[in-house]
Length: 165
Image (tube, rainbow, N blue to C red):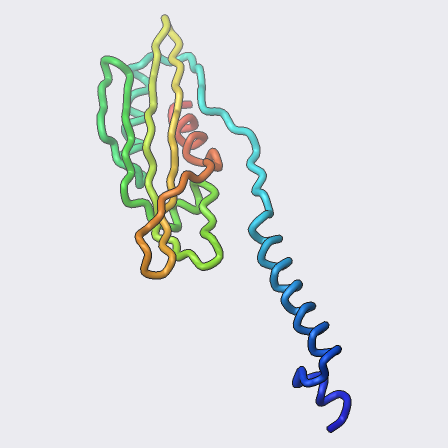
């Protein structure tokens, strides 16, 4: 048998051990480097003060929320509070709204969004604040689904604030 054939079939003791160790190290480095890559998100505003009354701002917020994928749980115009509870966000929507990468062998199943929007009126100005938390749901094989927080990209917050400008 030629020297090249022994190398390819891992029959040579020295060459085989080195090759197997090299492949193992390469696989390990590839997997850990992907998992350790941080996602950098640009800072974004969660609050806006605008020269409009509550009566001018409120219909724009309600219209915006009613046409998007996150459900309104509670709406109280008198107190300026809208509570949000999106239970069944698709994976596509979740990918747009937050950093929701699944683990190596996890199967993404979508996610949730919970939070509130508050509007405070002061004379002719209104201050709108958006506070929302996203969670991803994933499954590993036949195990029970896991839920983990995922960092907002600021897309939802920016869209809500832009709806009242």
